[in-house]
Image 1 (cartoon, one colour):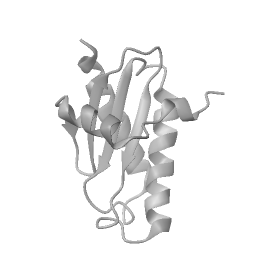
Image 2: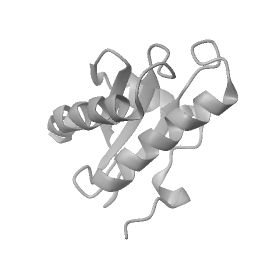
Image 3: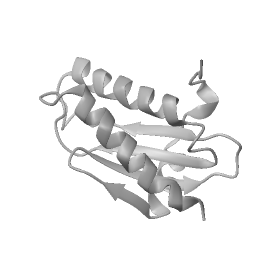
Image 4: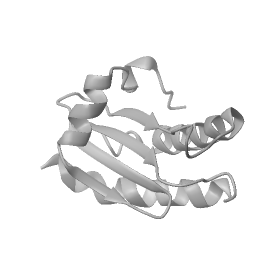
Length: 115
């Protein structure tokens, strides 16, 4: 079983902004994903799910849970990258499978950011 420990998370605002400033990103209908090489042997994840987009905390938490699970399952493929996933529009009226599929597709596209 692959875990998702605290060392695999982005915590500080400076870590988030440095990934976003690196300007290697891709987007879909629901998500925008940014990536930056981190020089580590593992990948790290940061999530931005704004209260303006998803009003209810239960919906924000559901979105985060789905995105963390997608990352956890693919983190070995993304080794050496920091990722920030930002929700673009409401996802509570969509199926979690649709959100997970888009996240997987965008993560695959961002593997080129390693170079």
